[in-house]
Image (cartoon, helix red, strand yellow):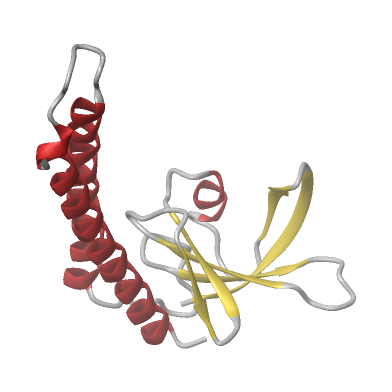
Length: 163
């Protein structure tokens, strides 16, 4: 898997998420400031609820912009063959004791944990260093085994590539 292409795909996904957040914030702001949002009696809370939503959407715009800008400014970080897993690493894992190898890809990211992007019909999962998967991967190197909990079961993976 080409790390530069994965990095660009992640950056584009974060930009799209930012654009969507901007659109949603505008919609929420329009709803909050619409003349139909004015309370007709003391029990009519539609306008108040719409203003809370608009505020929350504005916060989401800031968060999404920060995530996108973080990736846009950093640029791709390449790792050498003997490097340990660290922030900005793309990590390939293969399930141990499988007749048919099952591969998973993780990108160690400072933000946007939980985002998944597709690259060549393969999912790449963004994880932060503070997530359980991130904690299991940080500091490991190619050839190390890690245990990940999936659907209540412990699954053993071998790190087959750090780039």
